[in-house]
Length: 451
Image (tube, rainbow, N blue to C red; front, side):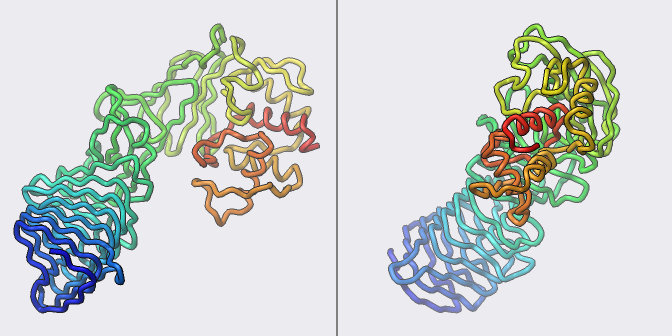
């Protein structure tokens, strides 16, 4: 049966579909007697935009769609309800577009429960509920999130029952808040996935008090997200490997791995790529609050994790590395450990602090050292007189309202001073060393951008 731009109002269910195929193209359906608009049992139901109407489907007192072991495909239209949930899915659900919403502030937009359920969210908007998508703690429902927009869901966008996980694909580019019924440190949030290098880019935020959603890559290369203690920060290791025991044995730390305060962190120096024959000089370890850690001169060192982020860098000199631009990156992203560098005004660099100290005294008197990329970009741009860039870019990690920083970052990139923007991310709060600042300052002077 195909319904084209039909208008129907009833105290009963508008469409009861048993073991058949129904296609709804637009229209305006409304039930007022605590019955669902659609009851779909062991059948196929497809909802599209109509030729003359967008499609509006509403129920009062019951779920708008009640799917029992059938297949429902939503391509367009607006589906709403004031009941406990707008779509009750115990079968196959494919949401490719449209909007599913609830007018019940305590309701769930899409509820997946029962002994069978295969939900794939490929697009569309899910909004207005206490929870956006809920996976019950009973049965074997599965949810795959490929892409969607979540709006105004007050408790969570994704509510996971006990033991439930959600398969979030790399095509998901939005932001999702997640609540779990069984929060515990180490609990998996996403399914293990063989496709590498995207789980750490997912924008997922925990709604469980005391927890954040961390990131791990196992020894087998599989990446996943998990609940981690919120009382922790990250270790950014440059030319080094950082490890810690977070409760499941010693593991390597990534920049998305949360490390609780007072955890023992071990760092091991790694020779920079292409720096064969370089000599290890020591460590630069700086906390986010500006304080430095003394790690000694051994190539393996340990420290207790403070209550803030830490950037640890292994320092080298010599070897087969371009001392001005090691590793082929831009001058703002140099490996901060190549201390055998000669810059204008500094005859010979000794150890790291001595070399940068000489350069700063001769070339940067009374110039404050920035602690991150945002500070470095702003420092150089302001010293250049705040020139207008050719194009003021929108960076994904800089607030559009922060025009000052966007102008500085855009101009620095255009001048080739900080041209290592990756996937439109400027990484404004990534730590910069004194050496990086000296190199960028010197390059700006050589090109007569600053005096």
